[in-house]
Length: 162
Length: 135
Image (cartoon, rainbow over all chains, first blue to last red; front, side, top):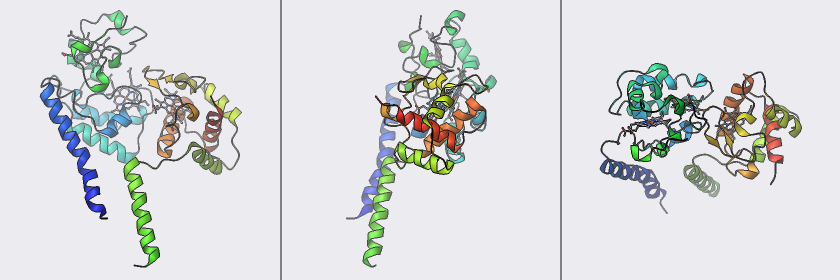
């Protein structure tokens, strides 16, 4: 009975699995890779309770840093975290920021939904559609991007509510 | 190494393993309630808890705005529309099993609804009411 080999396996296994998932995702779709980055479990846990886990690649590092340092006043709600968790997430977000191919500059209010590329990509969405009860807000990606909780924003998986 | 040192080592290893496996130490909702009541220094009142939960406290939202007046069912976030699993433990086994998570949400949500953190007595009241909701 030696505890060490099991412990090492336990540590190594998640890393190996993450690597495999990463390789799989990279092979599956080159273009979408930035959005489909495997999410840090803690990010999924802490930042997807009130909305989808927004892809880190869709904002620049400076926007994430500002967001993370102001969680107590987060778009009209208190999303505060303990300092250690906040620091861990900030580091991870900054390391994976800005990889989406169209990100340039810091959008107003540090909102993905106010980025220049976002407005361009959505210029065919009618003004009335944004106001539908099932949509309400451009930040509500999952109202139309049915797989966005998986980081998938592919056109194939868009359903506009009526 | 004598017998008791070995026992202690084994116990520590087992505990460490359990913590590693579950990530956080699981507790029962009743233990969290007992902790809050002890801090409050008075027995909780489910009726007061229900009252707190269903009234607005000067702001835009009550607790029920997101959790529903009957938190035995899934709620819906008042601004984002995201579904929120039922809050009453008898209807959602994950609720009130992780003190840090429970404290985090009490802190945030009381702040949003009441403009301040809830007291231990208020948290005990709300939890005692939620625990009284049965299928």
